[in-house]
Amino acid sequence: MKEIEINKKKYTIKEVLGKGAFGTVFKAQDKSGNYVAIKKIKKDKFILEEKTFLEFFKNDCDVIVCFKDFEEKK
Image 1 (tube, helix red, strand yellow):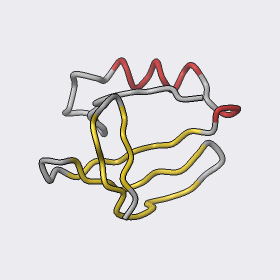
Image 2 (image 1 turned 90 degrees about the horizontal axis):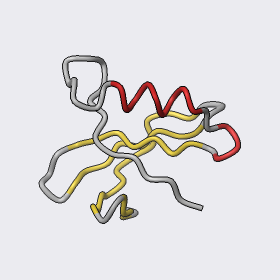
Image 3 (image 1 turned 135 degrees about the vertical axis):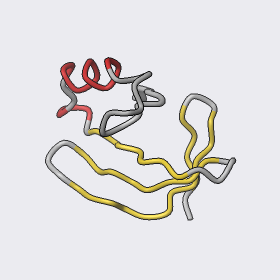
C-alpha cells in the first residue's frame, strides 16, 4: 500500500474510490486508524470554486463532507 504525506500527516492509500475529469478520489487511513477520502485534483483542472466550497464547510461535519485539510504541491 502506498503511503502519502499531506501537511506532515501520513496516510495509507487503501483503494481508488473513483476517477473523473477533475482527478481521482482515494480511500485512505490515517495513523489513528480513521478512514478518510483524499481527492487528488489535476493542476490544470483545479478551480478556485472547489477550494472555496471545501473551505466553507471546513468546520461543518454535518454536511456531505467534513473538509479536514488542503495542500498544493508542484
